[in-house]
Image (cartoon, rainbow, N blue to C red; front, side, top):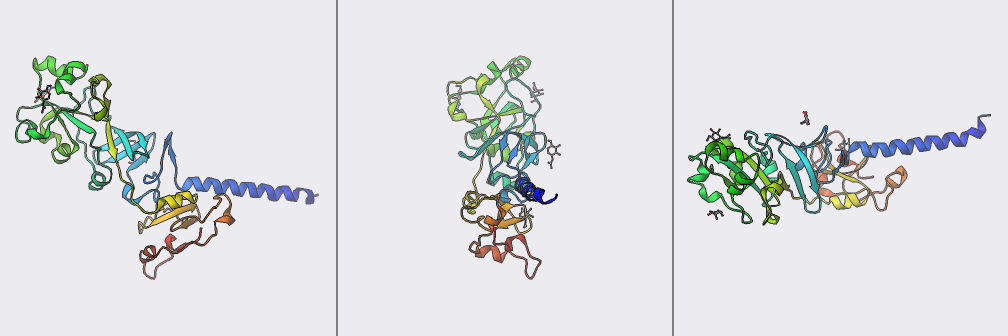
Length: 297
Ligand SMILES: *[C@@H]1O[C@H](CO)[C@@H](O)[C@H](O)[C@H]1NC(C)=O
Ligand SMILES: *[C@@H]1O[C@H](CO)[C@@H](O)[C@H](O)[C@H]1NC(C)=O
Ligand SMILES: *[C@@H]1O[C@H](CO)[C@@H](O)[C@H](O)[C@H]1NC(C)=O
Ligand SMILES: *[C@@H]1O[C@H](CO)[C@@H](O)[C@H](O)[C@H]1NC(C)=O
C-alpha cells in the first residue's frame, strides 16, 4: 500500500528541500527593502555588502540611512551612477519651515559616501555675525544663476523671513564642507535646506528644485562582480571583515560560487575554486575554522 506513494513522497521531500534551500539563500542577505533594491556595496543584514558600508542602512518601516545626526529616509539608489538620495525629515523645504538640525556623518561615511558636488546646502536667516558673511564669505556662491532672494521670494515657507524682518535676511549657498566643519550653531543661521542635481536647475524656480541630499559612493574593488556573476551575493566575514562570496545559507566561498552553477541545485555548487592567498592570512591563528576557510561552494 505504501509502495505506490513512495516516489511521490521522495518528490515532495525534494521539492520541500529545494524550497527551503531557495528560502535560505534569500534570508542570508535581503536584496530588497520595500521596493528599493539592495545591492553591493550596501547590505541591510550583518555580513552582507562591503564592510565599509556596514550598519549604514536600516530597513524598518522604510529604508533609512543611519548617521550620528539621525536616520534619513532613502529616496532612491542609482547603482549605475553610484549615488543615493536621502531626505532629512527635519529640514526646511520650500513648503515647510523647521528649525535647524545639524547634518553629521561618521568619518567613514564622509570618505566613502559623501554628499555629491552637485548637492548644495542653503543657509538661511543668518545673523550678521555669521562666519559665512564675514571671514568665510568666500564659501558662499551662486549656483546655476540663482540667488537666495529667489527662495525668500517664491517659497511659502521662506517668505516668512521677509515678512518678519521687513528686509531680506542674509543667506548663503554653500557646499557640504562648510556644514561638515562648522555646526549650525557656529554658522549662526536659523534654518537650512539642501538641494541636489543643481547643475540641471538653470532657469528652474525654487518650487521645482529637488530638496534632499545626494550622496555619491565609490565601490571597493574586491572582485564582487565575479561572485555576483556566479550566482552569489557579496558579503564579508563579520569577524575578519575579509570578503566572502555567499552562495547559500550553508556555503560561503572566497571568490565565486563555481563556474556556471545553479544556486538551487546543491550538488552543482561543489566546484573547487582557486585559493585566494590574502584571505588565508586573515584566518585566526590556530583558531577554530572560520567561514573563510571554506573554499568550495
Ligand atoms: C531603524 O529605524 C527606525 C525608524 O527610524 C528606528 O526606530 C530604529 O531604532 C532603527 N534601528 C537602528 C538599529 O538604527
Ligand atoms: C531669524 O534669525 C533670528 C536670529 O538671528 C531669530 O531671532 C529669528 O527668530 C529668525 N527668524 C525665524 C523666522 O525663525
Ligand atoms: C549672486 O547673485 C546676486 C543676484 O543676482 C548678485 O547680487 C550677487 O552679486 C551674486 N553673487 C555672486 C558671489 O556672484
Ligand atoms: C557565510 O557568511 C555569512 C555572512 O558573513 C554568515 O552569516 C554565515 O554564517 C556564513 N556561513 C558559513 C557557513 O560560514
